[in-house]
Image (cartoon, rainbow, N blue to C red; front, side, top):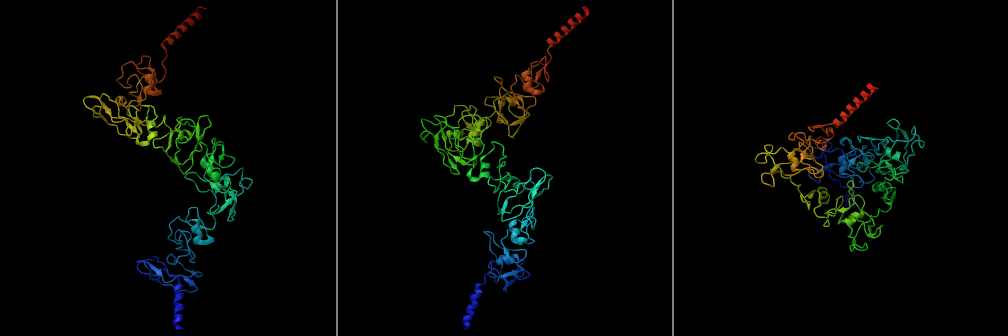
Length: 552
């Protein structure tokens, strides 16, 4: 009989939960010197701290069983005897009352990092007494954060006279409109907490209780169903400006039921816009016999060729939406589903990699006319790997074209001993003088690309890196400001032959500040010169009038 009693006791003891390792202070597991005193448990249970499994850790000798209650719990106790987790969040922190181990993101005690409270942690640590985090997350409070200021109609914040009725919220909560912080604004008394659902939302409600933003776009508009505050570029309602719908706004406002904007952007629809007409080869739109195979799109979507609107043309059944990526694009695909234009240049050609429809002046492929490459087309078709056209425009290359040959002074091309210092260029690039192609000539190692600006230009720089010609007049002279190479008939500087200024050269060299040549062509001036013949005519006319008056 005694042996049987011992077996029963052993079995009961074995049912008491074994405790996990916990971190105490100092060296050792004495209580309360290192580990806090265990809580008082009902029914009574003796718990003592001892060395844990891991070196330097401590563990309790036993843990309360289910149904037991306790007071005086601490974080180390909860690490050793955790409560019930919430999803992946372990219940290893003692609540403020010390009566439970709760699944909070951080300690409920004084050691918590500043301004880290959330609604879920407040509820876990304080229960229903202080379940809401303050606006600055510095502590918990009994009432939810009030709504932000919103604009209602008329004078006052009465509902529904001025502000629309708040939505119906589950779990039930009371929200009322009141004067906002700013004069003339209104605000809700509280906002639904995370996890709450609602119906009947309005734009003023969403302004006062915004949803989750999407990047820099705030979620201050109610979706069409009135069940969410969404990050749209404008209202989802009747007050939206005409023809302003986009795919992203359609998705935000309607969800997957009408996620595509119509071609004229007047509304949303369930299906994407079909592709525009394109020219394939032969008769018919079969793929790949006539039209090239559509690209592979991510996220996956099916693109098929069919007859276009115009006789003899073909069109894709649909086009990839914004944000989709693809490989294997062709010119006919880009004609049917163009990319983003650059000014008046349409993006109807596939880049060399086949990953984008780009705004080039001609195809990026083998069918391009000979010697027609430009810097802008090289950049569009190849990206930064080969963004410069060769000197004969036969292809693209990685490095810009070097400057043309010029004549500097003396022997050699040192700067500034022989060749003038190159200008300062923005974006920054290094220009250096070196031996030119022809013996005794000098040339710059490279020239600024289109869009670059510079100061300190000289005639020799402009001869090596000319500007845009004006008809047959080459832009090989630096303007007076030194910030452009201009198409003038002679230098804008001191070396110009006397009395050779013209209106066109004054305009090229000085801009609108001194665009007129003086009468003797010795320089430029801001106003047009008075004609000497008209002055003489006025003197003659005045004399005649005087004689008539005197004689008659």
